[in-house]
Image 1 (spheres, helix red, strand yellow):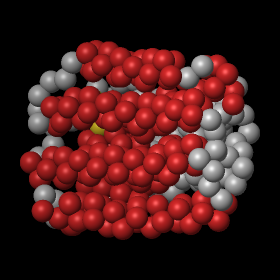
Image 2: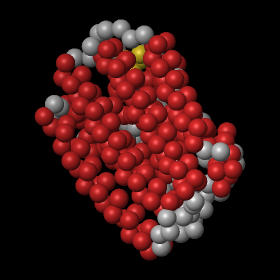
Image 3: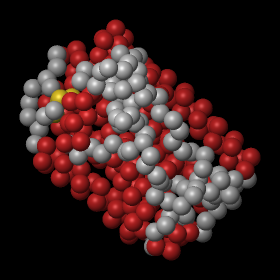
Length: 291
């Protein structure tokens, strides 16, 4: 596929790829052992931040899926209306934060202020949007949108998109439940590590089940032909991206975004592009950075 074409479409359609050096909006995150046990008002604000980022990502993903699925089938998509819907979803997320978080609450939670908290919520929403669109539909993206594909390819992309949504819902819900608990009540460092390990184990187990969803709609050989990787690669990349971006709106130092896996076909945090391989000389460098 031509990733340069795909990337231009992502930008034209309103997707913003986080720059490799993009910093988090909040102040230096606290060690997980010291983070949390806030008062009820601050804990509610923290829950709102996590909820706003997750809801924004799900709403935007639904809009983008509907648009791209229509194009894959040879139909039309009103990209202007889709972009307006995306903007409205992002604004709802910010309105939710503003309604439940005072500037004092946000400073207590380690944000510099309201604008910085807003930036983190929108960064999570945008970056998840980019990861899901690139991972599920990247091979079909052209300069003016998604190009029509045959029935078997469309079936594979449709189930991949649904798997991506399921992973987003599951991982965000479990990460938030754990971090919201830490934010609202005293939890010992040992218990935090134990709970974190349990959440990660459940995520790996769920990932295996999500990957099995592809089998009935997309043969393994077809999936490999389209994406250059097995479905497990997509599931692992999306789960990791959801987990780390959820953690980013909870200013602690453990559930954070690490180095991306260049070549897995998913544009992850700190990547400019990803064409599913690590070859130089094509549209995306082996570093997945446009330097």
